[in-house]
Image 1 (cartoon, rainbow, N blue to C red):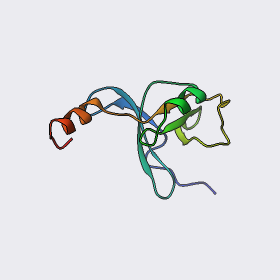
Image 2: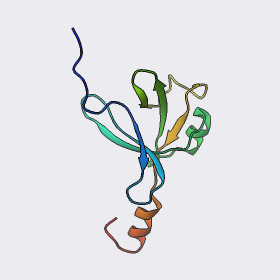
Image 3: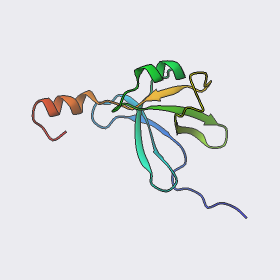
Length: 105
């Protein structure tokens, strides 16, 4: 028996629609998905953990031959010794500039 194919498989590298910065996007989760947009800048697990905050989460970026890129929630199981690269949620400078000027974005 085979599993049904997903309409979109894995993470996609693209440009941020607002500022044009290179980002990685993926709908993470099987049931209640979270659309994650992360900067396409790679860190070690320890570096990402030190840079992460309450509004900027760190994600483990896995790559396989079959599924391509995949973002995974970082956990205490991974720890700072995780060998996979890590990325941080994107903070769009265009969005924050719009908020400072009173714009919608």
